[in-house]
Image 1: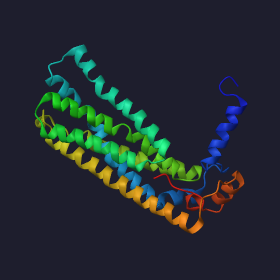
Image 2: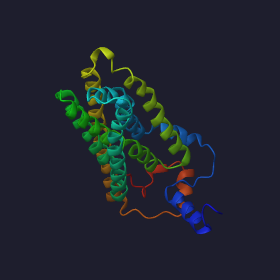
Image 3: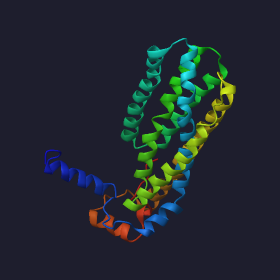
Length: 259
């Protein structure tokens, strides 16, 4: 009672129902297989793989840049803060606007483009200040994609088992490939790290391509449902449960994807 009022609790329940998360079974095997076969989850896993490789490697080159700027000890530690400070501003801005517009893929592509600019700066310039600026751009581009992707997957999978399996797939594939990011910055390639920057740039391009491709496909599906079934109606909790029990999930005519 000290945490939420009864009215706030009811709002949370209704919000969960509006997110098609009202089925009562603990684990639904049909939803499990539906998640594994869903093409959308293949796209999102590829995007998340493209994210985790550069994200896992970010801390591999930032200390080298700070060291080359001439900072040591406490000051060096302090100079690692600005890239993350810039990143948190972008996280809030991107996520706020994404929720406001109900667009995920475009914001993922925009963030990845920002990271691309950072890697291009890192590759093309030997100026240490330009490199530091590039590192800031990389952080600003990569970190917003984490919450954007997690929410995109949750938004577009109906049924709590299907949603849970989809998020698990996303994290499993992403974290497995994150190990690649820790191996691409070799000491012998310091301080320019052309190989590491090049690999990360390639995977940020992968994110842009697949996020825009998935947005295009989902938008086309939404338009197709609008043309065939008209304006989507708001389903009651009983209708939502019937759709889940019937194995329809996010293929329901009244469901529209976040794009």
